[in-house]
Structure formats: structure tokens, C-alpha cells
View 1 (cartoon, rainbow, N blue to C red):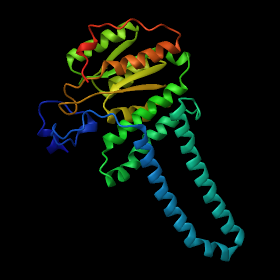
View 2 (cartoon, rainbow, N blue to C red; view 1 turned 120 degrees about the vertical axis):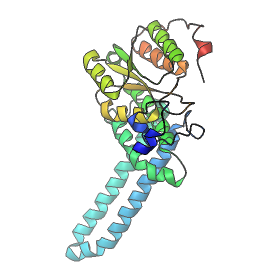
View 3 (cartoon, rainbow, N blue to C red; view 1 turned 120 degrees about the horizontal axis):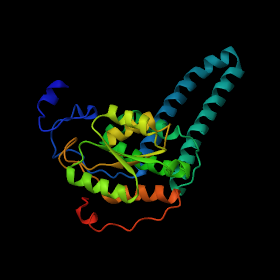
Length: 278
């Protein structure tokens, strides 16, 4: 790890990128994966796990039945109920994503899905799908889920967290856009400073601007305590250097929070839009 980092001297890598190879040409810096990517890998992973569990049950059922037939019957019933619960839960999630309605009303849903990204990596690797692409798909899912769960009180005191790697011009545009909606912006040089800001500011909602890897970590660690709308950054020069966001992505998040409060959207500032990178 230290050898890789020592070769990259033009930026300070965040801990999620310590193993980056330094090749910006092959870096996946502009991702907008569909929600179905995560769902397909989830179903595949759970399907394989169910098949393995079913095969194990098939092997031990004769031994269980030799002890008592009721034990084998109970094990088969438990397996069937577990399958029904797992895939029924996925069906409810798909319905929530399709309708935008709060069908699974649990703040633990997004952190649970964030932890699932790690377990989906083997299936992704099998099909040449990177962790970052899986993360991009997960972020899209998380945004729909939190929008479905958020109420008026959640939107009353939002905070925008921005990483240090946003290039200066785009950062100033971002701040100007946030001012239109009277929303505080905090540029966090480290994850620790971001956590301290959350403690002191006590926001009711968060707009997190970050790369997919940092968003996954934040949604996993903080997502149960407050709703988070994610804006993924674009990284044309690789991670942790001169990144930018699409201003429209941030505007969409701010407008959603404003509507939750019953506020009218401010007139767009034409000076901001042409400079927004896409």
C-alpha cells in the first residue's frame, strides 16, 4: 500500500483510494449506473446462497428424519419461509423504487444495502463489474429510498458536505447555488472533520457530495441517524484531484428539500449553469 501511494505525488489520496494504480485513463470517474445493476447482483448472490443452503439441507434431511421426521419437516419449512421472506423483501424494495413510495419504512434499509455492496463484489467481479459501478447503482437506490422516507421535519435544517478535492471554480458555483436555497455548505478536509461538523451542526438532513466509495461509507455509518441525499462527484483526473459535480444534481436535491418544506424554488441563476461540467 505504501509503495503505491509513494508513486502518486500530485494529490493526497483519501483512505478509500490508497490502492489506486495512478492511471487516470482507465479510472471510472464518470459513473451513472442504473438501479437494476445492484438489484441483479443482489438476486444473483442471494440465489447462489439459497442454492447452497438448499443443497446442504438436501444432504442432511435423511439424517434429521432418522432422528425424528418432524425435525426434517421443520428444517424444510424454515428454509422455505426464509426464502419467501428474503425474496419477498426484494420484491417490496423493487416496488418502492418503482413507485417512489415509502413501502419499507425503516431507516436501517439504506445502511443494510450499503453493507451489501461488499458481498456483491464477487458476483460483480465474475461479470467484470467494478466496486465503483456497484456503488453508483447503490447510490441511485439510496436516493430514491430516502426521498420516499423524508418528511417535512427532515428537510427543515439540511447541510451540504463537500470534499476537499472539488476544484475551486466548481466549489464556488456549488456554494452560490446553496445560497439560493439558504443551505449551509461545509468543506470537509477529512472524514473526521465531517463527523465533528455533524455533531456541532445537528442537521436534520444531509446532502453528501463525494465519490461512490465515500458515499457508501457515509451511508453505512450515518444513514440510520439522518436521511442523506447523495451527489456523486466526477473525477476526470482520477480520485482526489480536481473533481466536480453536475450542478443540476445538487439543484435537484435542494429543490426536493424545499418542496418538503413547502417552499417555492428560486429562479435559476443563468451565470451558474454554463460553467457546470457534465
